[in-house]
Structure formats: C-alpha cells, structure tokens
Length: 284
Ligand SMILES: Nc1ncnc2c1ncn2[C@@H]1O[C@H](COP(=O)(O)OP(=O)(O)OP(=O)(O)O)[C@@H](O)[C@H]1O
Image (cartoon, rainbow, N blue to C red; front, side, top):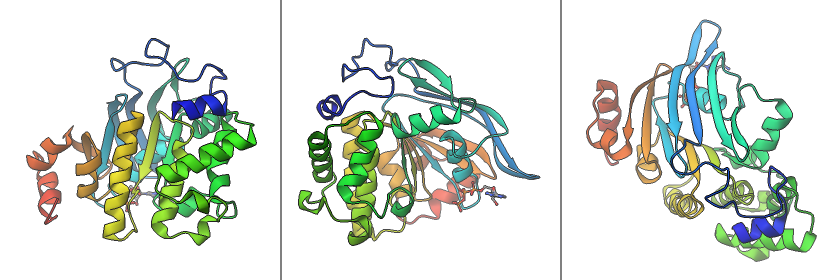
C-alpha cells in the first residue's frame, strides 16, 4: 500500500517522501487519532445526539449501535463533517498536528475527506461515481492526493481492484455493470487507495445478501488490520460489530448509555436497554 502511495505522489501535506515513519509527527499508539468532546446536535427541539465524548486510538474500530432514531447517523455526520454540531469538538491528529475539524475551513475539510479520511456509505451509489469506470473511480481518489502518472494510477487502481476481489479485467466497466456486493467492494477500494488513517462507515454491509455480507465483512476486517486503519462504524447489526469493532458505544435517544470493549458489552451488558438489544438478537 505504502509503495503504491509513494508511487502515487504527495499526500495531504505535500510531502514527497512516502511512508510516514513511527518517529514522524504522526501520532503513535500513545495519542488518540480522534478526540471527540461533548458533541451535541439538535433538530429544533428534538435531540439528534447529546454530549458525546470519546477517544479513538490509531488502529482502533469503534462501533456505534442502537435502535432506529437513537442518533447514530447524526453522530457519524457530526464526526465526519457532514453535519455541523451545535456544540463540541472533534479533534483529528493530522500529520502536522491536532485540528478541530468542526471549526476548520470547508476547503481544508474537503481535502481531509479526500485523503486522510474515508467514508463508506451503506448505498455504494452514494460513494461512487456511477458514470465513471471502476478504474476511474479508484484513480480519481489517487489524483486527489497528487498522483499524475497515468500508467501508475491505472496500475494502482488494478491492484486495488484485485485487493477487493474484483477481476482486474473489469477495470473499464462502470459500477452499474457490477453486482451490489461488487459495487460495495469498489467503494471500499476507492476510499482506501489513498491510505487514509480514519474511515467512517455507515452500515457498510446493509442491504446485501447474508452470504455477500459475510465475505465483505471478512475483506473489511483484513483491510482494517493490514492498513492499521481506525474506524467509526455505525450499524444496527450486532454481528457486524462483533466481527469488526474493538469497542462499542450503545446509543439511546441521542445519548451514549453504555460503552466498553465489544465482547464485554455484548456478553455482559450492564444497561437494561443494551440487555434488551442483545437479547433481541438470536445469534450474535
Ligand atoms: N434532518 C432531520 N430533521 C429533524 N430531525 C431529524 C433529522 N435527522 C434525524 N432527526 C432526528 O434525530 C434523531 C436521531 O436520528 P438519527 O437518524 O441520527 O438516528 P439513527 O440511530 O441513525 O437511526 P437509523 O438507524 O434509523 O438511521 C431522531 O429522533 C430523528 O427523528
């Protein structure tokens, strides 16, 4: 991955030297990658999410679960810059230091979204350009990070298609010619090709057949581990968090009511609502 990035050109900070070493300014395992403090978002009198705080560490996956309307999407929107919270901080450690993304300029946030951040939508159509070829979808993101050499961009796109188990021979096909599972894998390739540090995932396996889901989950788990990716994962599916998330936050009526290591929360839920949530699923 890093070799591909080095070929692809400069990263967000315009550095030419490729991989960031552990001794560089990028935070090590002793500093949170994302520091979230008291995030609150209201829709008029209705609470979207209230007073949410947590730290996300490099390489960690945080799952957010809760029933419909509990505030998961609102929180994810506030964290990823798609919604502006009424209150609170979302501090991301960029390569040059911590930045409160709630208060950063729109162009800077857009640059971050194309480089160090990834967003995997439930519906791949929301994360892909349907009128552009598979290779173009992946290559476009590399170009956003400064890559200009056509042959190398195409080579990296082909490698990433294979990495997400799409035949390289399909590189010139459009996403509309792909199955739902393939479209989702293409969306993942488009997002991860630039070597992001943090991925926001909104029901990444939602709307897919069970067997397709299982394969996608396996693939995601491997990529997250291999890339040392941090992620915030929203889902109502406890089997998905069981497989992917290190830690879990349980939301109800916009508030976080329970948090802890995933296995701990699922095997020994403390809050009555979490107990109900876990017991309502026959097989987790
Ligand atoms: N655009 C909006 N305008 C008004 N209220 C909203 C809006 N979006 C969300 N809400 C309200 O905010 C609360 C949290 O909604 P949110 O969509 O964040 O929950 P969720 O847990 O993501 O639900 P789901 O799993 O169904 O997507 C709900 O009461 C919802 O009605």
